Length: 246
Ligand code: 13P
Image 1 (cartoon, rainbow, N blue to C red):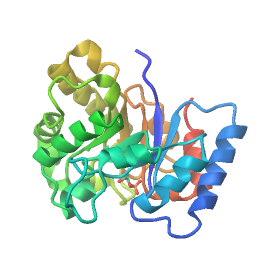
Image 2 (cartoon, helix red, strand yellow; image 1 turned 90 degrees about the horizontal axis):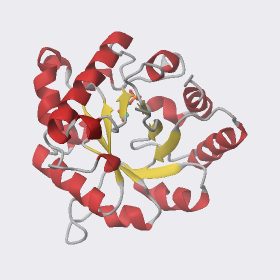
Image 3 (tube, rainbow, N blue to C red; image 1 turned 60 degrees about the horizontal axis):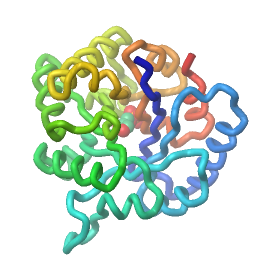
């Protein structure tokens, strides 16, 4: 089955300077290129979102997180309808940095996914094992897939497999391992929502993707794109990643 490919930039808490030029440069690259094989999404910090989303229609934009309620007394939080209202089409949920530093639980993640879907956002749901969980990877991935809502619509969910030990470290699993783990994830999705629906879900790889390894990773049969951190803050490098699909 032909699935949509996505090249997603997760800027994390970066982009204080030069960010407009990065977006403009990537946008120019997309307009010039005759070889764009994926949908390009940038997830900058909240403060930049509305400006970008309203000034560039070549790229899609997304939040890096949302609250699970629509509004209320939650100082510092942003809700899914708020993201939608400034032009977001996507939101990252369950990133390992939020699981680790904000102590996000599976229950909370499940509620956030539901809130994002209700607000008509596509969810980029991050899963992946820590270094000390590699031997238990299957159990961890199964638990994380089970945090997805029951009977979710496959059009609303994109999975990003990000081994925590590969994030920002320059290390990645081998190409064979990535392909096999994605196959395993698809089997877990099939158990949850059925084989034919699960076949339509894009599974991205994330963790130390850069211009050098993108070609090998992005052209694996089970990989439907990438979630890129550090390398997405450099317009030229991110453009090379965008160009790496066959
Ligand atoms: P790096 O590409 O910097 O390893 O980050 C990956 C990531 O966490 C994207 O969400």
